[in-house]
Length: 353
Image 1 (spheres, rainbow, N blue to C red):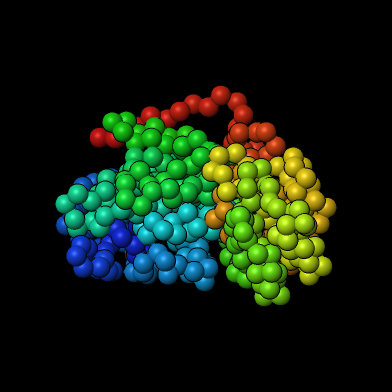
Image 2 (image 1 turned 30 degrees about the vertical axis):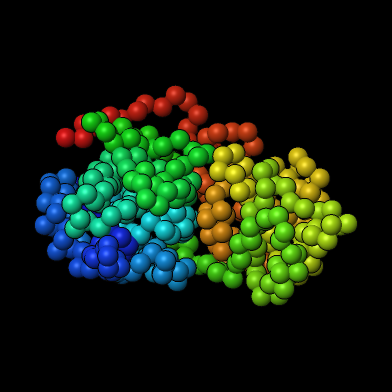
């Protein structure tokens, strides 16, 4: 049987309690063996406890430890499943995709909207699908949820109370797990398996909204190393000086201080084009970096890594942000990342039973 590492980090999937009491971390492995015994018919599973936290407690320091742990372990397994809370699942998936380059096997993250111990839990099917994806799916970091497999750094959580909690607006699904399980080839390896564990978490994410007082982010600049700006549409934001809310002083002072600003869109589909409107063009003149169609979570984590590995070269940092590392962004008008072959691809079909 294929060997699969199941690394538990916490989240709703492994919690107990619930209405009327609050959910809390619980003994996950005992519940797993009792509730999903057929999981062990799919693979020889080794259970490891990394943490038992609500995912709101997940931090960059834990990503570094997790990536290092997986880097040491993966050569001995045919796949890995990481159980994780849903609230920060997209952040962790993005971080692992940047930190674990060219993995030797699939790394699948999953969670649930209801705890495994509950009768109507979605955890059981998510776990079964995740283990199957770890055995048969593409060799990259993915999220498996509600019978779909998504590229991890392209995924957003879009629902709180429904089982189809995640979407991948700008990247097709990598797998569909129904009566049959169908997987796409995914990214091609571009070299040996390497760990890039360094991150600089001194980054701030700013969302543009009507009424934003520019004085607030200006006060933050002395305390951050990088800034991700969630702009409107294709990269728009206010610049009219007569209204007193222009964000151009933020770009000017960020450039003076050597603080890179990555601009992404609040819109879920498509991405920014800073050359399209006056405000975007003005920000480009001040050194702003267009984040293309990256999700805000992917852009934030990628900027943390860029600051750690390119702290003294603004040009190298900008190139790194705008170059696909793990399929996290589209280049120009392309809808498929360069790592994916452009020729017609053969789809693998595996019967789910």
